[in-house]
Length: 209
Ligand SMILES: CCCCCCCCCCCCCC(=O)SCCNC(=O)CCNC(=O)[C@H](O)C(C)(C)COP(=O)(O)OP(=O)(O)OC[C@H]1O[C@@H](n2cnc3c(N)ncnc32)[C@H](O)[C@@H]1OP(=O)(O)O
Figure (cartoon, rainbow, N blue to C red):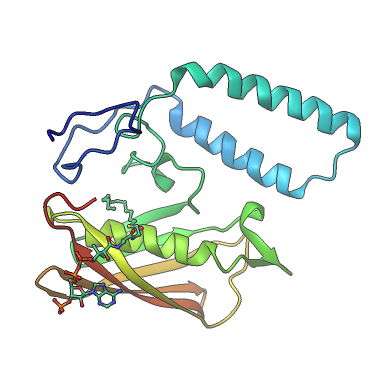
């Protein structure tokens, strides 16, 4: 098999780990994703009446229908592939604003929002590994290293993680052994340790999906 993209097959290609051109977003694309995040927060918080539910459903369906003809396969999609944009242009991810980054350490600021609420003002426990996985993965795959995937991610919840507050996150490379890359991370609210983690990333062999 060569590395060509097949829209019908969903676009999986066996050599996806090879460097490729990054898609270029049109002007305003990050702002559109930001509007999507705002929508997610507002819908999560809203208790609309039936008339407004019907109106919002019509509006959202109309937007979804307008976007449908512009759909491309995974290798061309913009969401999630914009490395320079906070949150990579993915509405799924809690947005980490990178404050400093080199090949061994990453420091950032993250704010979980209403969309990420678990209960009683605390972020949902699943959103914290999501955030860690993404930035550990970013650091694990930095510095021209071949692509590695998460083999495990161990998260300790040390204290609740409040939503709607700026939190600090710090990730560091612990060690590399052959194909294995071990990273650690911490999430803090001021001096309070909210969560820490250890992640193992394993470099993919050629052809590994
Ligand atoms: C995705 C990256 C995109 C890049 C863009 C960057 C920005 C975006 C960032 C987004 C980031 C998002 C990132 C994501 O979310 S990636 C999505 C989540 N991860 C996956 O889907 C991975 C699924 N698993 C696999 O594909 C395989 O299991 C892998 C590739 C991980 C290893 O299977 P493989 O067959 O290749 O490995 P091996 O058996 O030869 O083992 C090799 C060595 O590893 C050790 N080992 C293996 N597993 C474990 C384990 N669980 N605990 C402890 N050790 C383990 C093993 O003992 C051995 O060690 P040693 O005996 O040699 O000492």
